[in-house]
Image 1 (cartoon, rainbow, N blue to C red):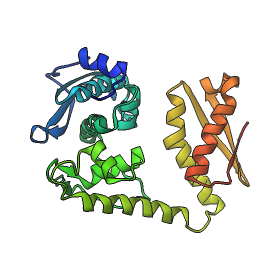
Image 2: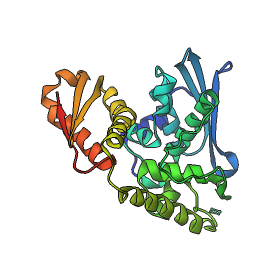
Image 3: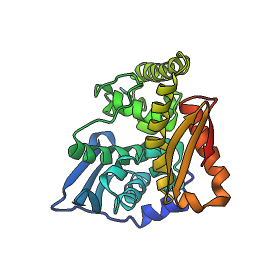
Image 4: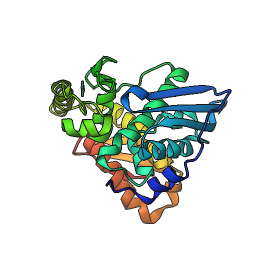
Length: 277
Ligand code: FES
């Protein structure tokens, strides 16, 4: 018996926003009936804001709960904001999912991504990652290289078993397990190579800090009504300015500094220190 959070049980028993939007502006699909679960997500837009979202799913209780909470998470958001939602965010919003059910949160994210691709007409790939393709790796569950790489990257997956829990790939005949292992090794080796490269020049460091603040730190702070601006780099001191809710939040300044510093140390340079001005 899986150990489900109260929120998962609530969304499973009382799913929100079930059904179809007849004149939907965007529709995203993920999974397939042949593979045991599927999700169709309908979005209604006003400009680039999602004003309504509904879903139809065939799957287990976790799939219903993941789809239901996803619709609540995206209604009212702009497409740019929705684009930043990961499968981890969906699982976190539910108070967690059993490891073996994480693939349900991945299916929710894939349906959202499929819908948004029709708007943006693009794949979002970070430049320093190994190039992959839509090539099917697991024919039993129709899982592609891109889907596996995304799950590894977002959820920090290190083993084939973990990839199976998050994507279902490898969970039937097992023929694809060697291929999955290769994708895991290639990804982590490429990150290690990146970490062992020549030290960055000051300009490269500034560009990388700006990118990490803009793409990873700022969106997190915005969730609580705050934000951050990168002001300057002085040696290894990163000078930043907190804005919005973060600005007046004196008690949590140390927590925010620790949060920002730990991400910059991890993504840019372990010698960096953050100073608020
Ligand atoms: S090909 Fe992946 S489990 Fe069969």
